Length: 298
Image (tube, rainbow, N blue to C red; front, side, top):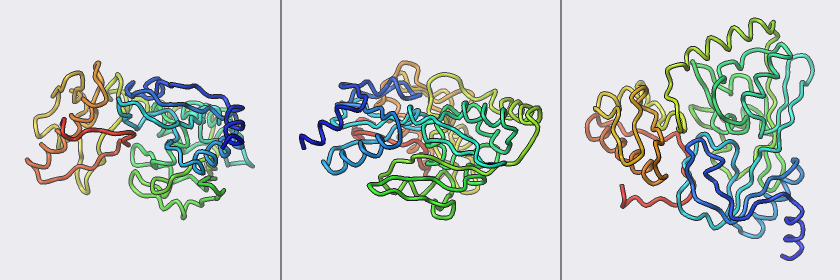
């Protein structure tokens, strides 16, 4: 164990780390330690050691689709923000590490005349995160262009698009404890001016989405339905629980207006319960919960 500690001490870290500083909700308690590996080798080393030592931990990108508990997390966090290299592979492929932010990825696409990913614009996530969730917008999804991911779960794997088993807001990576190292995408050649025009169109589509501290859509759309519309039809637009508010602009967004993670969690459970009682539809969360939440407080 002392040997492992010596290795971990060489890796950039912050003790008593405030997780809320790395989530778009701006909520979450502190954790024992957060590691910031400088490259893939260090990231795999941290993952391997924490796993072997049975230390509780999770991997965090930009924290845009998570709700982290207010309670102290007696474990570790592996932050991927330094895994931010991106390169062109051949004429029409891009390889990017998991910590590359969507905004940087799209800038690279414009510079290199590569199209088809413009629908991601405005999503405050990392490319590892959007692959993990099979993020999408406007009927387009990451799975449409992703060739493969390199994934580490104690062993190094290359997951092809088929192995990822992409579905609606789903990938194989959600079912295993793993670290996405990088992703390769196959795109189409296009003039930068056309890509910028496409970006503008998708930005306009997102113009009326709620501002403020959110995780994006809280619930997945049920089969043949729309979660936001169901929530609105149940009269829940603007419903407030403490500092957590169902958005007046889009009912599938819950905005943090000075709330705790537990208030947001309680509001999510309340909305889910009301919609089920009034419509018979059981909504399923898109947001990922990290840490412990107390259902008795809902």
